[in-house]
Each structure stands twice: as C-alpha cells, then as structure tokens.
Length: 352
Image 1: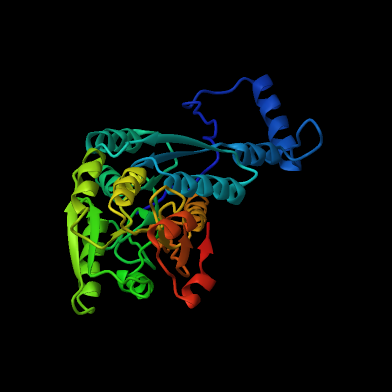
Image 2: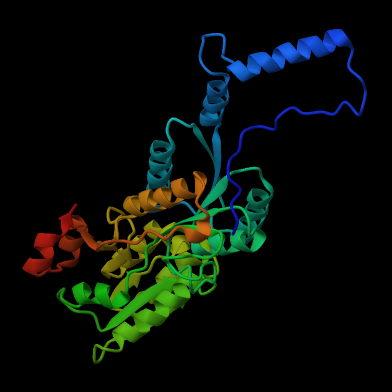
C-alpha cells in the first residue's frame, strides 16, 4: 500500500500569459523579489515558514473506530488505543469517530463502506469480521487492527513482520495448547470441553482448529462445539451446553464476549466452570480469564498506527504481539463451584 505523506497546503501560483507588466508593477515586483531574497519574517520577527510548520503540527488527525460489538474488554482495548495514540502524536490533536456494529453483519458492512469513503486518516477496527469487511472496501486507507487473531489467515496481511498491505496493528492469538496446560491442572479436570463461536469469523476458524488439535493430545478429552450466527444466538448456544460438557472455554470471539453475562448465567445454572480468552473475569458465573492483557494490545496497535500516521506505509509496519499470558480468577465463582487451583497456578494468578 502506498501511504500519501502529509504535505503543506498548495502554493499560490499563476501565469501572466505573455502580458507585459507596467513599469510601476515591474518595479514593485522587483522590490518584492529583492525582499524575499533577503529573507522574510512573520510579524513577530520569526521566519514565515514557522507559521506553516505550526499549522501542519496543529492539523487534527481524524481516526475512525469500528467496534464489532460492546464488551468490557473491547471497550478497555479501544480506550487504551485512543489514549496511547494521542500521546504518541502529541502535540497534534487527534479526533475519533467511534461506531459500534453491535454484532450485526449488515451494520458491519454499512459502517465499513462509510469509513472507506470518509476523509479519515485511518480506521482502527476491533473484531476480525469487521477488519476483513473494511479491508475489502479499501486498499488505500490504513487500517489498524486491534487485537486481531490471525491477519495472515484472514488474508489481510502477508506476514506479521511485514504486512505488505494496508492493515497493521496488534494480534491476540494464543495457542489453545498453552491454555489447556493450565486448565487441565485444575481439579476436577474436564473430559468434555464446550465452546461457543461464530464460524464466519476467520479468526475463530483458525482458533477452533487449533483447539481440536490441542484437545486431541489429552486421551479421553473431547470438544463440544456450539455455533452462532450473531449475538442473538448466544443465549440458546450457552444453554445448549448445559449437561453436555464439564467445562467451557470461550475463545477470542468478540460477538460471544459481548454476551458474556448470558454465558456466565447459563454456566452458573449448570455449575460449569467457564474460562474465557481475554474476557472479563468479574462477570458473574465466569471462573477465569486466560490470555494476553488487552489494554496492552490496544497500546501496541496505537504504536503501529502512530508510525503509519507519521509517514511509514502500513505495509512496512509490523503487528504488535503479546509477550505472555495472564490468569485472572474470580474467587466467588471458584468458591461456589468448589474448584481447587494448584499452588503454582494460584500463586501466579490474579484473584478478584
């Protein structure tokens, strides 16, 4: 992708078309040229170019923000992105135009079209389906993906280190095998692990495939999948797992995370422990959140965005990647379920 560098405003110019200037005019013009040769200055004695430089510095950067849905972790990630970008671009002011698709595919499409046709300097997007939708609408406007699972698999980037296209940002992918290393230590260890996801989400297609492979390495353990086509399907999908699984592991699906209270409520009724990848561990009925720190991923995406907005093509800006996995446990749910965490896991976890 070629990113157009910010340039000063157009210079006034014109032609005289061969007309002969009157002597008085010619005299004034000569005097003006002579003055310019000696150097011009502003009214305060500063160089005139300083005014142009100040104007360029003061120019507001306009950034669109497209959220796939609403959820505490999503809101926190977006807030961290906005604050970090303001800091990185200071003293230039930054404005944000935030639009939320509420998990509605038709809204994702219409908002994407609007942002693609807007005069924004770039668009920050959280939610893989929304990133893909916007990337299909524009190949020129820079897109900043916040905590995207698999940009390469979703075909919006050629690699994480050198995207090659107009999408950069941060990724939140954590191999399910790493998550299971913790989950399978917790007594009682599950034999049937349930999960809910939207199969149209390219990020989740990759994640579910990896989850199946990871579970297959534990003899006698299986995955029970419940799929959705939108946020409206989450309640029935959550209820369908009751009685069919011993625990639930919810992946980084923004649509499901936006309805996490429903998932927690259904699980509490069935006395099921629920582990969420990066979700809010304080939601009633949720046992633990496992995954990267999402506000940090928001800041990593802002780092990438700042580079693009100051002249580096998005195609050359690497995606920020998580440096580790955190484990946050809700004490109330742990007590109700009578679950015991091993000492090594409990000592490293954040208990709320």
